[in-house]
Amino acid sequence: MHAHGTDLLPLIGVGVLVVGFMVRLNPLAVVAAAAFATGLAAGLSPLQVLSALGKAFNDNRYVSLIWLVTPVVGVLERAGLRDRAREAVARFRRPGGGLLSVGQLLLSYFVLRQITAALGLTALGGQAQMVRPLIAPMAEAAGDAQAQPRLTPDQRDLVRAHAAASDNVAVFFGEDIFIAFGSVLLIRGVLAGGGHEVSPLSISLWALPTAGLALLIHGVRLLRLDRRLRRADP
Image (tube, rainbow, N blue to C red; front, side):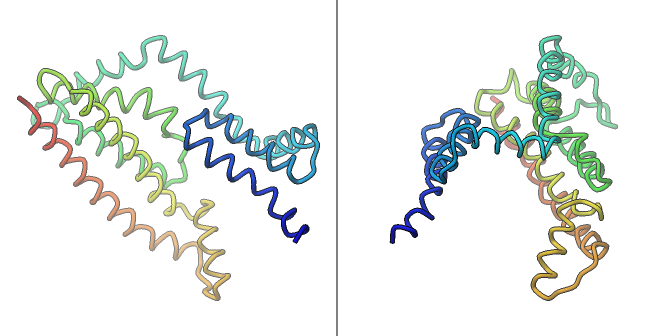
């Protein structure tokens, strides 16, 4: 019983994560606290836990790229990037001559994001480097022109949510088309473990109709968003 309890003790880190997220503490602090709680419960010293965290970070150096992107985005926003994005929307026109709606703008970004993801260029978009500083402000500006006099706070949150969802859905279903992407190899490995030998090319080809359905379904949702904004007009 004692050995069994000792084996389960490192799972205390899971409890730290759950409680920390429930009370909405800083996610980075919660994860660090959970890591230290697990390490200490496993019998490691604080220095050993810190060393293990440093080694994991160093072994996955691509994670450090976010520390390069974040200050750049912050400087650009301070220099007026969001304002320039809003002004750019005012110059966009549909073939008929009218302004782009929120749904049309986000659908255009969805198509572009899905195509680039299918080519393996998943880093060209993203929530931090593209949606927050550019796509969301552009969508809000289109919404302000669409809903008179301006978007309400609830409508603004709805537009932002759809902007974030457009990026997530597009890259999630688009990346599987790229034959050398990690998710394709993961799917192949799982199927092979179950006794089903499938080539990466077959997985990529079967991802095409899935990506097409994702485009169709999310496109309908974006066009419904336009109707919701219009119905809310006074």
